[in-house]
Image 1 (spheres, rainbow, N blue to C red):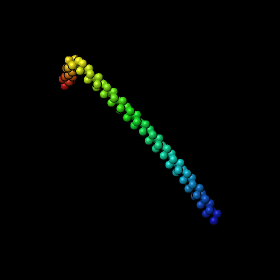
Image 2 (cartoon, rainbow, N blue to C red):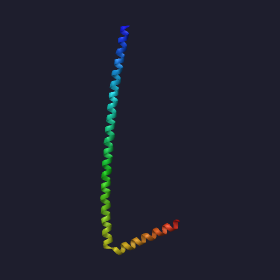
Image 3 (tube, rainbow, N blue to C red):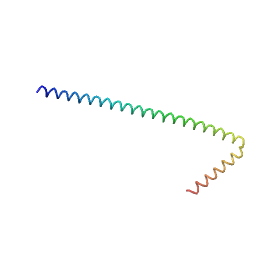
Amino acid sequence: MASTSTARHSKSDDNAGLEGRAAEKLRDAVSYAQDNVQDAADSVRDTAVQAVERTADQAQNMQGEFDSAVRRNPTLAVLGALGVGMVLGLALTRRT
């Protein structure tokens, strides 16, 4: 009987050791996955920040060019604004 009890404890210890190693491997895999997800999120964030900065720079450049064009040709700018207003007015009154 003692040998049966010892065998049971031995199998139980082996199972506990296997479960412990499996749990450790699972923790390692989860940690690795979390690190990869964090790295990917950081990369996406950095790319988005760079895109926003480039877009803001481009918008400022376009605004500066537009302001310069209006200052060089104020009459043309006013006529253009009137034309756009008339087109929008016609389009909106025909829709309703």
